[in-house]
Amino acid sequence: MKILLVEDDTVMSTALAEMLTANHYMINLAVDGQTGLDLASAVDYDLILLDLQIPKLDGISLCRQLRSQGYEKPILLLTSYTSDAEIVAGLDAGADDYVIKPYTPEALLAKLRALLRRSAAAGTAKTATIASTDRHPTSTLTWGSLCVDLVAGRVAVGEQVIPLTATEYNLLELFLRHPDRIFSRSAILDRLWGFDDAPTERAIVTHVKDVRKKLRAGGLTDDLLETVYGMGYRLKPAPQRAEVTNQPEHTTDHRSPYQTKSRSKNMAAVNRILKRFRDSFQEQIAILEQAKAALLVNEIQPELQQTAKQEAHKLAGSMASFGYPEGSKLARSLEHLLLRDRSLTSEEITQFAQLVTALQQELTQSPQLAVIAPVSILQNYRVLVIDDDTALTERLQAEAASWGIRLKVAPDLTTARARLALSSPDIVLLDLSFPQTQEDGLTLLHELSERLPHLPVIIFTGRDSLADRLAVSRLGARQFLHKPATAEQIFQAIAHTLPSPTISEAKVLIVDDDATSLAALSAVLTPWGLDVITLTEPQRFWQVLVTSAPDLVVLDLEMPLVSGLELCQVVRQDAQWGDLPILVVTAHTDADSLQQAFAAGADDFITKPVLGPELVTRVLSRIERTRSRQEQPS
Image 1 (spheres, rainbow, N blue to C red):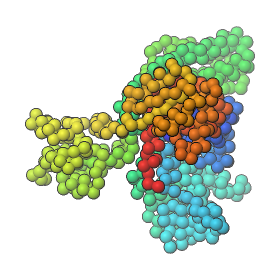
Image 2: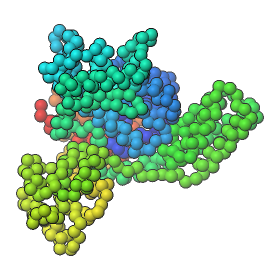
Image 3: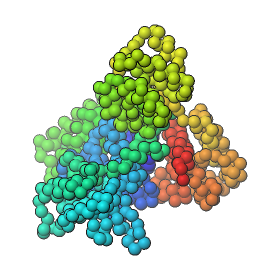
Image 4: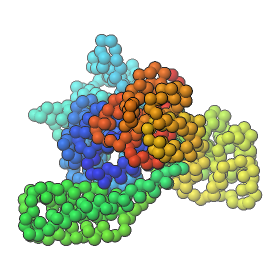
């Protein structure tokens, strides 16, 4: 998944980018709203992560401008403000959701997964798709069995025509045209009524209720509108989405087992980043100290006050994420003092000085750094739980979605055999004891060891004798998990046991005129089972490409004689190699350089100096994604 992060706070954006990269998202960074608009217009991102307070073009204006251009991908706002007015303004401008700084990484990742899941499901299941015809290119909107004929003004569920008032019709059309948008009541009023004749917001509730009632009476069994409490309404996923279960493209957390195994290292790297940026806080607090000194002698200049306000704002949004939650609170109080248009009173100046001193003291404390816990594994793994403990299986089913797992339950061995006969899961969680039958789980484990010897099985049981453990081991079970265990422990055991992908046959061609750089990149990728081909002479690129037939190419952009951009264009122009994944390595991350790289056909970029974990993650995930797409039926 490719995310555009628009954030002008260097400390915050770097740490956030590192955290998202560790969770296997591809991140492009824009430091102002205008750059963000240019990148969003030029590159196909899966989501935009947008700070409200950014230079050149503020977050709300950027959001509104993107939506006015027909941009439909999710937009998640980052804001330090907690006022309803700011949040409502952002949502009305077209944002899908928001996160208030400081936030926990887990909460931000959960929001991202939810928005990406809805967006991908909408594209896959064609919810509210606009069916084209020769005469009317946007004549029909559909949702499940519901069909809206825009030309005839006709609404039907199957063959049953649903009589709607003009307001109800317009309300339904609004949601069908914008399947990923949350509309507040005030936004609906703005869309459907003029300034003079708009009813009260309470009328929106009545209209939504009437639409639901009429559609239900006409035969639509599923409620198509979701109430998002405190925010408004949005279109639910269409019911046929539930049938789309075997797609190789994954819609939420794009992680594979090799990534699961290495994620603890990634998290440790994130925490090292947090520690590294502690020095940046000292520089920002030094500016606040200058403002304090100037205020105490009544000689503060407007430029210094504005700069101090900006730094306080950045500290308020970032310090908690770096292990200083109290620091965020102090910085927010400083920001609030500087937001006032008038001169500060003597009491306020004293308060400001005390807050700056407290902030300095806070930074002398050890940061409260937490390891960011992994929240999910590769979605679309199918787990069959064979256990008659209803309370346990219901708890696992409730939490499975957050781990990206599709979980089925067989309460007895007979049902388990029937399910296994229909389809083979990716992993089995098997209890040994079933009081209602003379058989126990060892019988089924023996059958699986003969019929499906490569199917991973985890034994999860209250029995703990050496005889049982020996029997389980001899029958080839992968793990023995003793009851009781928490749901998290169970899912962690599943993640540990899941099969790793076979990427050992993949070839990577790296082109760089710097032999030292080539050696370093090769040393990073080779331990992951990749066949790495290196080339220091870009003029020999085509010959090596054709003879080696790589699965992915890594190009340095700045090379003599032939640049990486030129090589990228050559590949994209060829009928045979035009779809080959290309990563570019560059020291230039300005908007113009990135736009040139993407325009030439690059799939992604990696900045110099190259971080090993980032390179491995980008290369392996890109190869997996390409292979998965190639395996889809045409």
